[in-house]
Length: 397
Image 1 (cartoon, helix red, strand yellow):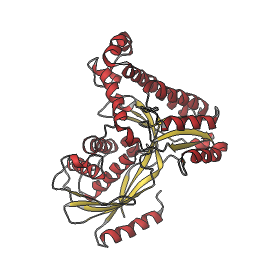
Image 2 (cartoon, rainbow, N blue to C red; image 1 turned 90 degrees about the vertical axis):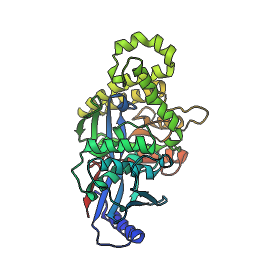
Image 3 (tube, one colour; image 1 turned 45 degrees about the horizontal axis):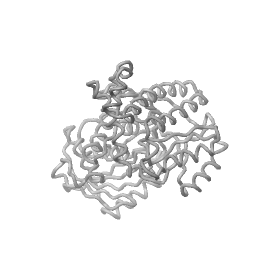
Image 4 (cartoon, helix red, strand yellow; image 1 turned 120 degrees about the vertical axis):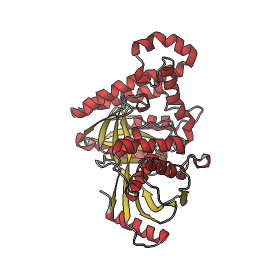
């Protein structure tokens, strides 16, 4: 539920930015997401557990009668995107304009006629913290366009694919589908990407607080975008291993075939690619085991498996330590483990290298954990999150 006062403030900002008119207005909402399990498994056809979070991008939009989309967001420069061409533009890579144009192109492909509109947005999702603020922006824009431009209903999977296409082709980030799909469906979900055309999705009503733990995400003090090349190398190296077997993704490679080919793969692709493939199979099995633990309400087992997952990411996937002396994520994890002292669990979160880490902290230790992490990494670095049952959505105001 979005606070009505937040919507009222957005309406006031809209009037100040674009003037008051009789055009019907749309409220668009898209939550953040947390990867609960499945570190870099989605793009290889594996499983993840993801949770939509109680932080969101919220926007108020209305048609403007022009051939341009105008975006006003708190804390950012205004953006204008002309609709005269919906092709990707090199000068819009890694920009909000690229995401806007990409989503417009995807919605146009459903048979809609793109038309200009104004939208005022604000967000309480930390930017660059690994909570998929870019995917939330994509899906909030998509749901707004779905209502403003006449056409058929767009399902959650289709909307998620639109966001992925916008991020891959227009924004320039080679992401998988997990972020967008989690935000589209909402809640806590086990997502299976074995079938690229129709990902599997199982939902579970689960509150970590009911089991004695808080879900904490800690910003490590470095935007994960600073490590885009390192992030991109992870799926590239995994898929290079798959390509050695004539396949596109690691889920299509047999474990026995891989084992037999390890010496040749090391020679041809290097040790890191082999290690990252080994992480994929290990982490994918840990996802299934953690989903079973959550379904059974076995928090101790879930935490034990989460610690194993974190170790696999650090040792095999190698997306915790960045090259060189600057190690923000590893320092944050080391500090968190020191505070937890064997209780709870912590692991790298999302793409890795920078962004955020995830910690499951006993409720009686949350205040001390937050205070210490904030003292080391900056005020507000550690936040407690809840799972939002609602995914990306839009409605007429």
